[in-house]
Length: 250
Length: 326
Ligand SMILES: Nc1ncnc2c1ncn2[C@@H]1O[C@H](COP(=O)(O)OP(=O)(O)O)[C@@H](O)[C@H]1O
Ligand SMILES: [Mg+2]
Image (cartoon, rainbow over all chains, first blue to last red; front, side, top):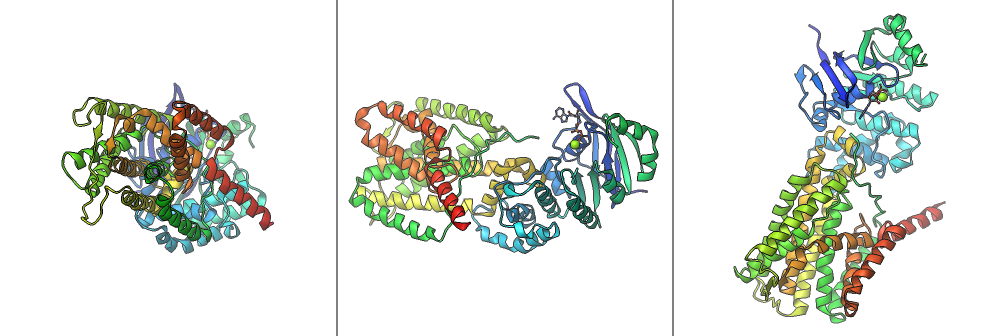
């Protein structure tokens, strides 16, 4: 029997009468690098928000590693090993780049509520934080406020922060959006290495990146799964071509 | 999930080699002050400075606005006054009792309100504080309009004579410093670090696995506890607990002190408390005009000095440093 890291059954989200996500049965195999694609407004981000419980599902179930997590809070989902990045980059603007990563690393220490302890106790995390920053090419910016970074670097920082959680399931919402060519190459390589031993589900509009990275692709259209398969299968599907053409995409 | 918490632009905090020097100077000034200025005035400043620092812990470092902090301050004033006068407890234990009442009330307020965001949170705390005011007005032990007067100043330690205003001042100073150090530590703790992260970007903090409501709850209870300590201290030092301590105006005043000095700065609330208490003391002859002046200052602050006096000063220094660095 297949083992799925993420599985949804009848997942549905309606916003005041309009169904952004309809009856989605998504299955992501453990260890897969899986893409979720579809035209703008198809409901991809909403699926992510449902999986991480930032939105409450109107109906349906969510299973992570075979266990029902539909009732959990976002923080609890994260503690189950599911880490996400956001479509619009999400950092702690007035913390330094280094501190941003450390916030994520701090969770494992388990001293988050200890208001009587000195924050010097966080220094044990500094080395690991610098390693993670080196992986995304941000070493030189460690002391800068996150708010001062250029957009592409903010995305890199968000990725480093997400990886700092050492998640078993990684959800990436358009990690390449707004990045220049060299950045795309570097982040592609980083995702590929991060995917070793992990399950990755990513939303991405850059189909070259998707073809390059992902072994399985699910196409979403108007909140429903249109088709699923390998890049070759999906890109040859007339309905997919139609859906993309109809929305001005390639 | 979009966070509609108040976004407070944090002002740069003083973190220099100058800190020990400035702290030493401030302490020296505090030790000399009662021989130059009325100790009563100084005690008043210190009690409110502690109150404002406790409030700032919540507003400045957790980004949570409360309009109900008078409940913790005034509630603790009644509790400690009652303990000292009716139960005959020494000042130290009465303070502890007042602090405990702040913690308990804070837990109740926090439990009711913490899931609400921004202004809604503020309004719920305001409503709850009105209930506490009503209880203070109606209950027997609070003494109604008269309050609890003639609270004895008696220390646990026989060689400390708190009847003496100057001695009482030093006692207040020590308690203030303990509270202030507790706040400093909280801000610079693993917890304080995460609190800043939550203030900056709540959804992101949640996605990193932090149960943000619990962090905010703890911040609220800590702030309420220390506000309780401030109120209890005021009741002992001034031998008095009245409705003034629990009324809505008091909740507003602590917001004002914090804003004038600088939200999210370390010493801003102390400066803000000093300015407002000085105005109330030295402009007392102008009666209610003081309130109008306070209102005007508030408007000027909001319009011109968004970061408060200390916040603007720190920002100025930072700009200079940047220019010099180039
Ligand atoms: N919080 C919300 N309230 C109302 N409508 C929403 C909300 N979030 C998303 N939508 C709608 O749901 C649809 C899917 O949006 P989204 O999931 O962001 O699409 P995608 O990520 O595929 O571009 C869009 O029509 C969007 O307007
Ligand atoms: Mg999207």
